[in-house]
Length: 252
Ligand SMILES: Nc1ncnc2c1ncn2[C@@H]1O[C@H](COP(=O)(O)OP(=O)(O)OP(=O)(O)O)[C@@H](O)[C@H]1O
Figure 1: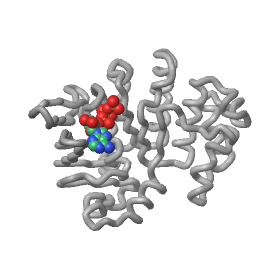
Figure 2: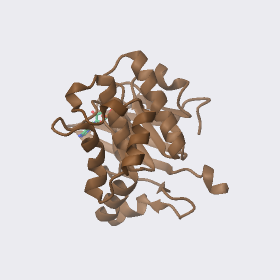
Figure 3: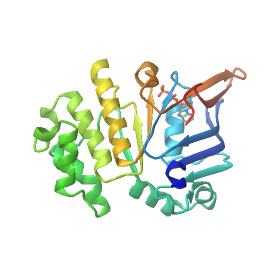
């Protein structure tokens, strides 16, 4: 079916300008795409614009300019025109898109310490009025090796287990786009590899698109379907420009 390879996220000609005191940072994203079932990694040195790009993709930060910004969570239904939603200031549609179709994995997991792992995983769905079925949740937990962890409190889990639980939480309500900000920052290299592998496999099985931001290029080079990086240019004493492009051989 032709729509199977249509990008879930398509970003073209984006510019985001951020200023702080007298310094100005300008991020350029000429062409960024993520296909369903694929994992795209965003790598680069500190300050190159990774979090800025993730915030733009998460629809929590408005682009300064953008030629095309489309999100197609349910092909063959036509994509949402995020550029038009931003230019109309349609916050409620942007919020609905985020709530219904997006999942997030944070650096340190972000599990609430006073709820069991199961309740943590059910929470986003409960807020949206649709918690995952017990069967789905337990099947996913089995798949992630977390069966025995569901009814425990996060503090009794290892850091690696907590991070896998956070991935499970992001995926349990069936998001179409998963945004992961340094999801392996808190674990050692061997665990980080396993977690990245799990994230990729689950995304593929679920047909979700994943964008993962990381400092660790080695970790994602042979795992991601595409890798984007940044060319940072100091324009003047106060201005920096960063251009986000696919790394050779990693174009989606
Ligand atoms: N709230 C803000 N207001 C203005 N400029 C900001 C703000 N936050 C970040 N910046 C600037 O935007 C640029 C990109 O920051 P960003 O956080 O996206 O980089 P990053 O690649 O995620 O860095 P790190 O790996 O250190 O988290 C930096 O020059 C930073 O100083």
